[in-house]
Length: 152
Image 1 (cartoon, rainbow, N blue to C red):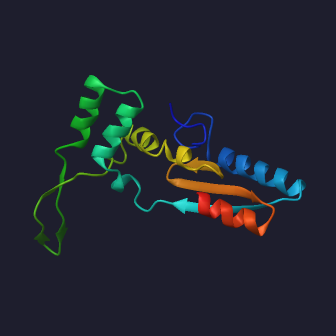
Image 2: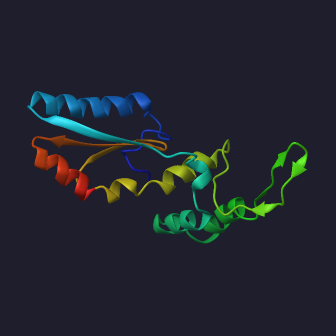
Image 3: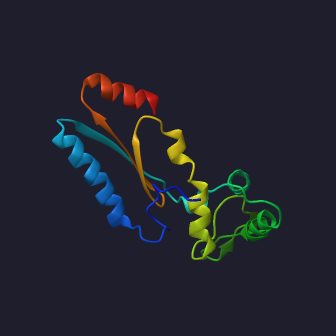
């Protein structure tokens, strides 16, 4: 269910397996006279920015339905927040995004939320570790570099 390219939240995978997979690819390409260029993405406050409506849509697309979607919905909706600074408290506002951190379900929901990211990348390799993503591709000519950047 979760992409094999994801190295977090998956038994038997880790930041080490993520690194080894990428280094293996790079080493192989260097041995064949290639160059590998990479783009590193780190989503800032990733868990906090997950849209509840978009997550539910992705869960449906992944085959979840009925009572399970309702259960997820009950965990995510009707959450509120307010902030107190120097004794002054803000108004209470509803949360429409964010996955509760520290929960058992949080990492799984986040992994399902970013699960389709590799499908959108057509001309590069992808390695993921939670909200950290590497896009990397073999570059043999200047034209390869420009095409890879434009295509992705």
